[in-house]
Length: 286
Length: 283
Image (cartoon, rainbow over all chains, first blue to last red; front, side, top):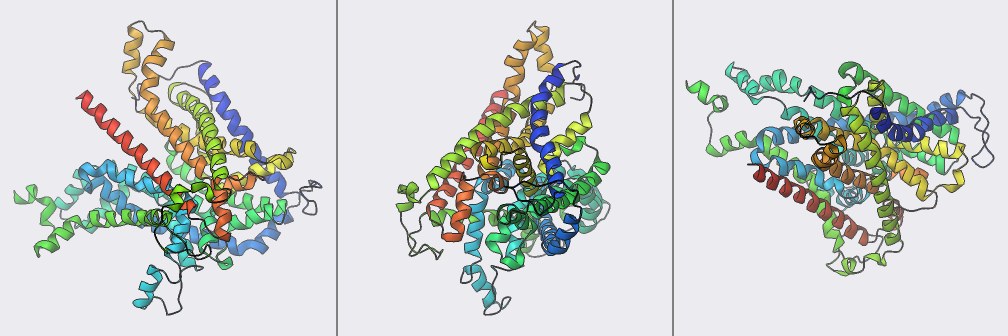
């Protein structure tokens, strides 16, 4: 397939123009206006207008005001990604190597639940984790939770919700990577007297690393920015950065502060993506 | 000899038959458990769609009824929110599928300058947190003086933008997997470039385009964070659910959830059956 000759000439550019224009106008330019907004004088408002004063102190203000939700979001995102990696790896490995002729069916089943509304699913977790619900009662029965212990409105519920909601973003790239591994390599390792653990860590894991890296990115990024889980399953003590940005825009009308926080979040993500691109190149991104 | 033919079993220690069976299938069992976990909330959604709640404020199963299924629009405002979501979903799908397919063709079949910045431009919207995409669009709309006109059209613009990259990736994967032998054969048989495209290339790529369109629709239909920032007074279905989540959830929301689940199952089962039929036809 690599022999497919890429045609020269104008057609390629003509095909690109409409889509690129759309992305330029509604993705690149907005990022520019976001950065501009973050430097406005915060004394204005969205009705009276803002003036551009290169107000860099906006950044130090939002960091000192909101470092807690920012750090919390990164921590919750990292934990959820870790749990997704563990669960997702088991599932992807089972589909790739153990599912046999049920492979396609299992892949479909991985994705199917996630076509049901994100918010409706998160609401059902709220019901499942409720104070007198089955899960809490069972955990109380075995004394993992105290008699008045609860799951809702705790970090546990929020991280569990994030893990649940972003699992397919981990499973699919992992599966794509693990499925490419030649099972004979794993057999060869056991022929050479490696036990299953050594075989896994010396053969399977390194060969699945591309999937691990892209799965981690694809899970971590939306999980950090999400606030639906934190708001529905958590309490104000579990507030995440997305929620802060949202309410600074819509409730507090403090556009410069909201903009500055968004820029900080985006900068963190861009650094991660660039790190990945340096490792893997841009062709592997898509 | 025995170590070569049964290398997969020799590493296991002898034990009871049941123990051996479990060890052999441990990964599969764990994988199936993870799969069950992904379905747990779906069971709740289906169950609650038949719930006859004693009170709107306490969210638990109180009794069986078909009422919610027979009167889906009784929940105030839900059906109009649903209609808005479907309309935006269709238009966003149409726009992003057309624009994204064109880009995918250019990426796979054409030469152009700036390929790696192009890849990055496609990838970054997928990699950006939704809150950043939403807030930057809002910043633009406000700066351009459209702050008072947020609504249907601004939501649509946003949805086309974030669905676009997913379309490119999906169609590109399908295109890159195609051998161009068939197209060359068509050209050898004196088909014009336009005929080749319409009769050979397009039918081959079509499953990819269809998949991309379905993905776009579900992304658009389900989006909350970006939409919520750019919606003004317009309410989509996810925004409706968000609103009632604070006030008490009407059970009809679960009817919609169940229907969405059934539709997606029907589509993937249909696609799988179609694939098997085509495979058989080829053999």
